[in-house]
Length: 133
Image (tube, rainbow, N blue to C red; front, side):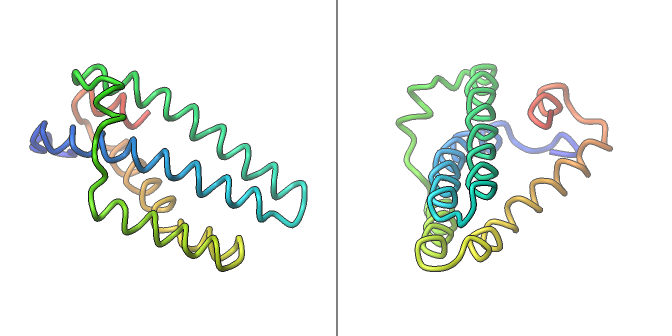
């Protein structure tokens, strides 16, 4: 992506799987809200849910630029790698503390933050820049 050589079909596949991931991410965050010990912790998780919900709406609009319809997003089958990670986090969240749930999410949260930060410093195609924003 950073040097413009990522094949379009790979990026489209990522967009499809990311939509599924974001849907499951909301479930994980709702579980966190349910398990919260304080009102502040619950509200923090619910605010995170609202942020991801907003991101999902942006994601749907962005996918349309690549001729990926909402019906295609909804009918896409989840890849094993995606399911393995989200099922792992849901399992941790259902059996362990909220702290452990967020630790299980940290590779995703920190990883995407790092990738976005690093790519934002590189001149890349306009479509990808919109994705990062």
